[in-house]
Amino acid sequence: KEAFAFYFNRNLEQRGFKGAVQVNYGNYGTGEMLLKVTPKSHGTSQGPPGGEVTVDRLSGGERSYSTLCMVLGLKEVTNSPFLGMDEFDVFMDDQNRVVSMDMLCRILKKKPTQSVIISPHAMTHVPDHDPEIKKHKMAPREMGQPTLDLHNNNDSD
Image (cartoon, rainbow, N blue to C red):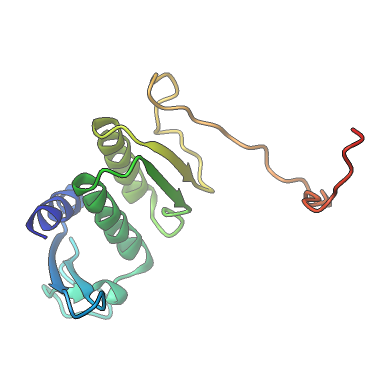
């Protein structure tokens, strides 16, 4: 728990946030983890100025950033060879997205992992010529383009 709390806070500090982790282990796997965050703005429109709030009280971008910090904190203390993230940055502004992608790339390069990161945003700030990062950009779907037929059992092609 202490190692995770350390990495969670170190990641949050990249944007001037602070955090706390409370773990209730419970009985028979019924435990829970509560994350509290003090955003750089020292509060949100829903939370008290200068106060620590649970993640569900943060704005969309603050919540996305805090969740990424949690996932990467867990990644630092586990040995999972895989990481998959889908649209984690969809509610982030450009500044948080740049900080988040830099942090993500740095941590994943430090702990080699096979990762798939999907984002609807341009990844212009992710290096193109890094031998450890392979970036793929899909062509946008055209209007009227049919979806893939995944149920076609025609093997004659």
